[in-house]
Length: 126
Image (cartoon, rainbow, N blue to C red; front, top):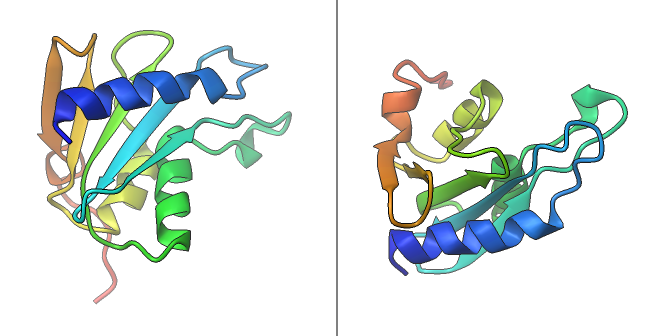
């Protein structure tokens, strides 16, 4: 799957976002090294601390199915171009510092950035 298709998959996933408080919907599509794709959406909660972002939803779904190696994650929102929040950056970094983050205004204006460039000193246990 190319990154344009991955972006489009994230755009389709956004329809399932649960954002009754912020009305800011986010969709993610995670590409494993072996070619599987897992989608995720943000799921809000009345206590904002219990909210989960789309990126973490996709990663949790993949990890719960035994996947640990990822190539890229596309992230889109109802409000234009978006990048992973700080918690999501650390969460993605846990699985590798070369995972590509796919963003952009639309599928024709895609930007590709490695997670290590968005989180240059990510936390790791030795």
